[in-house]
Length: 187
Image 1 (cartoon, rainbow, N blue to C red):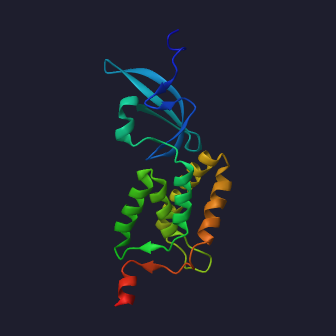
Image 2: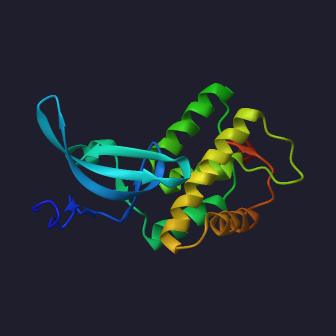
């Protein structure tokens, strides 16, 4: 009976709320439950990621170290959309190193970092094809960004992707600019 009367709110999070879990993106807290593990009772957030058909249980005490956070506010969403309008910044390093950096940005859970990956890996119609791994990273970043925008603005994922693509189109003509080129041009 005491369980039924719980306010179901812990550490500023409550059931029914959408949150961002860095490694998986946007999910919804469906429950806060107690579970016995190795003789200890743990209080857990039950987070459902419907699109991935995944349910995650996160101890309420590990929320901060796991990087779980509330959805971005409107200003942060606007900043991410502004970021995709910028010129792509591609470092002069091996692809494997850049791919690791992109993966780290995607898994950071920070929508502006994710927007940087979308911006850097976006290819317009008149640009050369992407490699398979570039395409995979681009689509993962686009999906993460779209899910958060759709949850914040209460629109479908398809509408969120269209919004991101509209902002990508506002960017400079998509000629890749390597970091360090502006210094060389100025010299």
